[in-house]
Image (tube, rainbow over all chains, first blue to last red; front, side, top):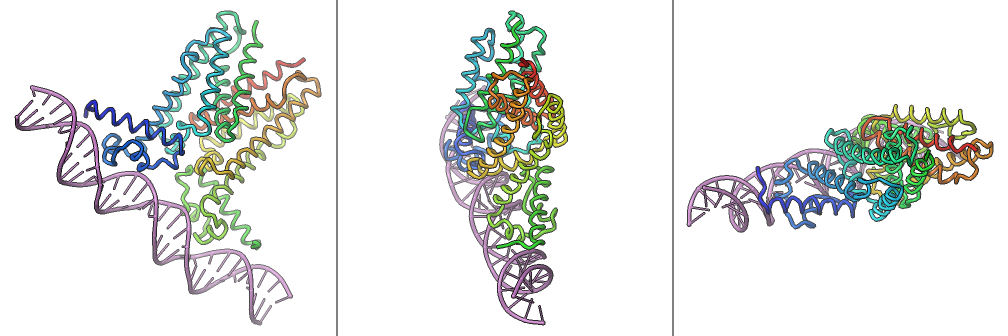
Length: 197
Length: 197
DNA sequence: CGAAAAATGGACCGGCAAGTCCAGAAACCC
DNA sequence: GGGTTTCTGGACTTGCCGGTCCATTTTTCG
């Protein structure tokens, strides 16, 4: 069931439009009808490209958004090779989420699906794993350069940092303030910096 | 519109039952019908006690669960007066969320409501504020006892710790593992301990 | 006890949004 | 260029589930 060039474009338009819709109105305000209107498509097209219906569409949106999360942090996240790079990354994360505001399309899309679904879980886990992996790589780089304590468990530090970010974003979504996200990042980095040998 | 003793009991039974239902099946699997069956009530009762319908019920559940979150951490959270108290609190938090598993009734109840609603936001903010306040108080206690650096901004440290917890729980809900929650708590406490004068 | 208020049962309604279908237009490919 | 596949439009169906209504029972309180 290959897609023609036009078909692929339509499919992409649908995913983008759905993501946009969710970003603006939450999952609640993301009915198929809304997506249709926004993307100038008809219901048959939606079910043509996503035979599994709304769930399949939301999953596609989630994947799409998960990729975006990591992309938005590049190139900094992929090259955390100096304190300055870490600082720039920190700034980028905060700016990114501040701009996103209170609606996290990924979070919201996943929330709508039965959280137990294997597929949704896989998307989340994969995202977290990649994210953490890059953070850990950055920490190891610092260690190699003698910029932080070689005794630190890079994976655990990365896990803690990641948890802080996730919580910070969650709180941002609830309160609209980036205070907690900033506090988590800053104390986390401060901890690494303070462990300089 | 006063409630008789019986009425109050029924109302409570409904809230408890709804919370339980959500805990077991998520918001998706929490239809009014389910709550009715579980609590042996009829639809008219639901709307009698919650004229605002499902939203009002969910809000009540959220409030109920928010209170539970803090209660479950007592008495430790309220008396973080020594390193040992902090350690016990840490253990309690992890045990609590490990037991809860992948379904956070509060999170899930709030997710269902339009996230923009003022009322839901108020519940979340209030919970976070109280939580953070008690953590900050604990940090100040350590400072007063000369157990950690007096120069630390207790509120910011508490904010970071709270963010770590929230993120850790979020990741627990997604992955089922407490690794991140533990990492966040342990590195957070380690940071305070490491700042001992 | 008896009137007023509150609590309960359960049938009924209605809307909304997901999902189905088929006919016709456009694109692909030899 | 013609046959085949893919794509598109939009009307129709369906079922779920929140919400309404009213009649009946139970509680409260002077």
